[in-house]
Length: 198
Image 1 (tube, rainbow, N blue to C red):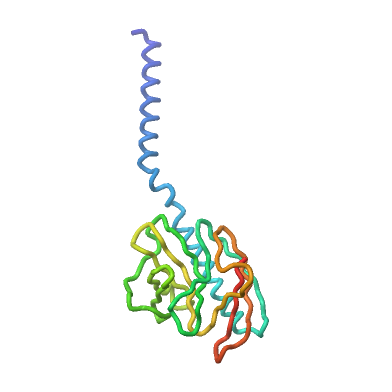
Image 2: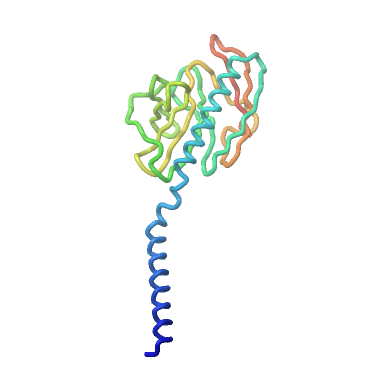
C-alpha cells in the first residue's frame, strides 16, 4: 500500500472508533439523562411549598378580608386543593402531585397516620403516606415507592381551616398557577383561609 492510502485508512478507522464509542456512551447514559435535573426540580417545588405555607400562615393571622397572591412554578406537575381525611378541622390540603424520575422524595410506611400529627399524615385522595419535611413548617412529602413514580408535596394544617374559594378551579396542571389567598374570618377558634386557584 502507498503511504497516502495508509494514512487515509488510519484516519477513517480512528473516526469510526470515536463515533462508535460516542454512540455507545450515549446509549448507556440515555436512560439517566432525564433524571439529571430531578433533585433541583424537587428542591424547587419543596421550597415553593414552604413559601406558600408561610403566606397562608401570615394571611391567617391578618385581618379579615386580608388578601394576597402567590405564583407557583411547577413544571410536569399538578397543583390541587385535595380533600383528605387528615383532620376534623379542615377539609382541604394544598398539594403538588408529581411523578419523580429519580428516588428524590422518600416514602414512609406510617400506615396508622390519618391526621396531621407530629411527623406523619396520609392523603386519602392519592393513598400516599407523607412525612414532615422539617419541624419549622407544615410541609409534608412522600412517594409511592423508593424510586421513580408518583410523589406528593403537601401542606397540612390542624390550626387553620383552608377552604376552596369557589372561584376559578380546585386544581391546575403546570407550569404556572396564580393563587389568591384571603382570610375569610374565624370559625370557632380557627382562622378560615380561602384559596383561589387560577
